[in-house]
Image 1: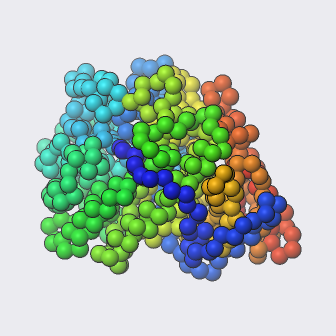
Image 2: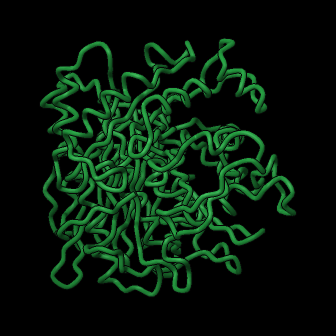
Length: 528
């Protein structure tokens, strides 16, 4: 895991919506009209863009997910019950594990068998603390099953071998009476698991081995050739295991270019199904220095502008992929994204611990809306990270647990999972902070499998409310997430400072009008 180091640049919401509109100035008391084209068939917003990321990093796993079977904290086979309950409500589609940078130093055999026999090592990437390997393959798969999710496994290309990766896939997926299937059964799981998504390394341009693009492509081809899924149900068609190659790092296009060039001329012996893209919101510069709390409107605007560059990055990656793959056979996996801020004062800086504010909720919504606009290619995304690390869903401290504003946004967005994108037209308007101009409003709409239309409305302006009118509809009801300030957070002592509240619209003229408070994320279902 490595943030994108890039020159900060101010960006208006380049795709006010897919067709691209100008962004005229908008008086603060003016109503924004959001026109939804429900007759146009758009791509499906794949549920997997709402994926999570759980790396062996800080207290993301140990303390966040795993407390051990003998812990006084309520758990099922060592996995804490409160966390499982909270994550089930998000309908988490996939969890990426074991990393991140940790993945390219992870050797799967260290994490199977009796706990007291497992290798204890130093986590050299994150904090220099002991890694017990108490949470290994069986524990992760148990966790994924408990929350109703699928496994996104990252194999070790950086310091591992193709034979090691192949054996791990066989250990997990073989249904026949092979030696590795017998070993899995002896370790407590006779039935094979499913591995729907497989990452072929992680950031191999950096922590995954500092490989040139050419060198990575040769390694990637070899691993893709030998990492076979042994579960017949995941070999063909839509159910086929998706192998994700490492792609773009910031403004360096070479990885995506070389991966796509190789794929366009590949022979039958290997294949991939997607290419990754990593992009963090850091607000310019490295290491991350933007505070998680106590910031003002200037830093808020800076982070919002950085977030909106995700749209530009996706357009660039899509252009490269379209050159080699005009039929769009390969997907984009934005399998690391989110706000990367300065560590919480007093914490181990290698644990990447940070608070999660109303600003982070807005950042999450803007990213999800951008992914939806690029749903023709973006089929997988994983926010970094699930618990206690970076832009987390959940924070824990011993037996205590609190849900973050980002968690609430993900829960509000559940209706968009596998819904069909519906184009929207609107004038975003703008608000000004110093000499920086930013869009005031963002909107995204989709139709679920039952035909219900859902709309996301983000009022980016931290100070002023606005109203939105949706023509052609007579009712709107749902939830709004806002807070007293842009840096408001939930704490163990005050867990509901930032929490969703019911909201409804008012029929007027030929549409329905919804009053959006400042610094807010709203999701409503609309009806005619």
